[in-house]
Length: 116
Image (cartoon, rainbow, N blue to C red):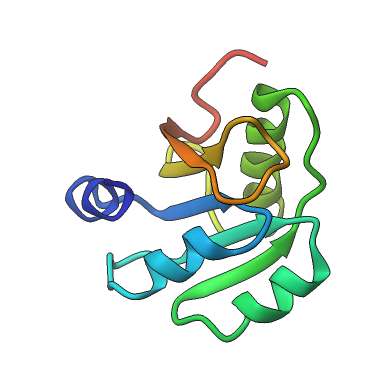
């Protein structure tokens, strides 16, 4: 669903919050026309994901509050110059947070388009 959405909405980026990198691996198998940023605190996962096609692994500390983590992911991509205010991005996350193997949420976001 994420790749289909990214392709048809012509989003600027996909940000996948991940523990193990499995979601990024699955997404790397297909070309959706935009980069996939895999955000994780796990060093071993970032090392693996560095080998995946079209995946850029980045460090992001994850916490209990889903909305804060998603905002931190958006802020990180803006700070790195990967996206700008007004760009569309797709975020993926698994709940409960912090557990591997459970990506079950996709969120379409216009960068900077929500109240702080």
